[in-house]
Image 1 (spheres, helix red, strand yellow):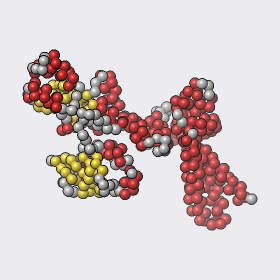
Image 2 (cartoon, one colour; image 1 turned 135 degrees about the horizontal axis):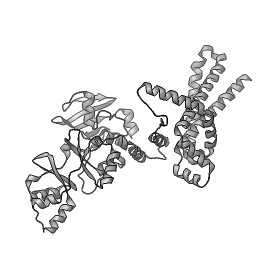
Image 3 (tube, rainbow, N blue to C red; image 1 turned 90 degrees about the vertical axis):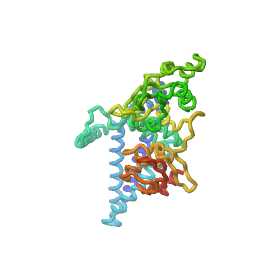
Length: 425
């Protein structure tokens, strides 16, 4: 009889854990737009969902606290149940068994069921969860204060009203909750890239100075016009005396209009009259800051400088948009193939290919903490500038330097671990 009651109690505890998992998934995955519409229409359950979503930190604390207590209780009961059969070894059997049951019955199954009908599940579960959050509120508040105190010990100060989970964290969690059938990889990458705009700097997406198209003013107006017409770019910097001295930015349309007015012949003064003044931005500006600056100035082109005002490269509005939606090419762009898969599963990659682009294209997780490009990644990991023909292995990936120009690694061959290759496919 006692064993039956214990088994029933374990089942109930697993059901409560499943409730916590289902509620968390439903509230994170529910459409805020539809919930807001129902709330405006007077739906009390929708208003309850809104209150929980706005107080995400307290919700997460209550769910974590409740779920942890439930799992500990289930493990303790299972240990007591098995003690009569296996004695001191009961815990070694009960802990793995309860873990498997929790993962299957209290995590995978409820989350899979709920994510398909997230809005309906959120409306059904929100009222009971709001009551539970209120009941556990005193405990979660104490836990939050303890957590903030511990963070301060590591030098991280947080204001009393500053949430531990940022809005970006909540949105990322909602994106991660969606499985591949509901949110394809390209859409997931785009949504994640929007959230990354505050973390990426201009220096990570700019066209490096050595790859910039610039024109020397000394070649004369006729040659300048020929260079502009032959170039695939709309805006081209013009320099005088040395490449650091940018005197302006030529715009193809403005130059062609001037040519038409002057019947095909321009003087140097007339060429310079069509130029836009150079606009310099710091390489440390975030992509969101630069995007806002482009909108405020109604401009699409800026020159990038470092803290010593040395020219580092250029950045365009298109560069930032490509970080969100991927490569944008038109009929005038030069063909590019920075990542070229081979028949044997390996990749031929240009050294200037960014780690971010490579990760996004191949669904890899190479670290971009210390380098922006794949060439920089190899140089940092190797702690030297390799020679052509050298091979390195980092994190299971094999990197072979195929070409090198001066101190630049221009072409590499990459072999991914077998498990990563399978995942990418």
